[in-house]
Length: 153
Length: 153
Image 1 (spheres, rainbow over the protein chains, first blue to last red):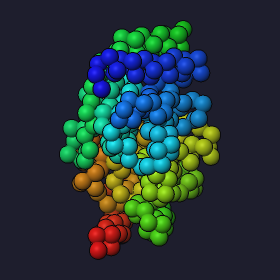
Image 2: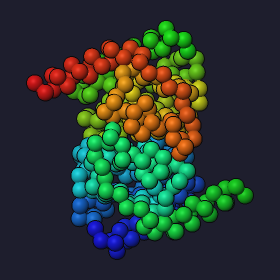
Image 3: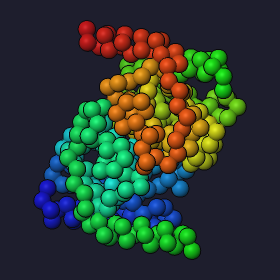
Image 4: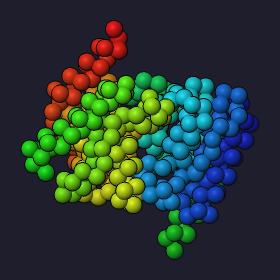
């Protein structure tokens, strides 16, 4: 996938994050695409509505894509997500054998790819997804900042 | 919870792991109990049947307990699981605000509590579950060894 495609797909993930705001959810969106860049699944965070602590955007698109493709592994597929995945989601991406994890803003407080657990660097990680950060990072961070500012006030 | 209670509850998790063998799933079982030690949910690994890479026993009991208790957080609850949780499941336990994570055998190859990502030790982990390992560890490890030995032959 070239950089223009990455940006276009990240914008689809950002649309999901924007939809999350309207739904009262933390604005993080994701899309999962197949090896040809076709969108298989899209989702935003649904922790509040589902009252499910695991209902992060990444988990939802991975599970939905596995259901649609009728496969527990999704080789060649790529995950686009507006924020650096946490350790839960990064580990799920590894279990799903995703080729790439492309994210927007870094998350120093809760990330698990380039912060904290750094899941893909561990010897306990048996499938290392290629990771690319910083795609449309400002748009992603702006959405999150506006959401938390509004919630505090 | 005293040690005898921990052993009794781990035996319920082991029953789930045994049921997993019969279902052709990797034998890992879990139960989730409330603050009084009452069982809220029990599950075993269902990755094969659900074709869901995230369908670990721990994820399933956390999600089921959240559904039954109609809450995205499960304070005071404890997770009993036959094998050291991976980074995905340990992070989910933290998000669910579980009080305790009690596990059987350690998992040097894939664990995320006392191996690899060591999720609860990271500064990105904002809720540290108390962790206790080695409860009925031999019974748990025996089940896994027998399962993989049978699968190889």
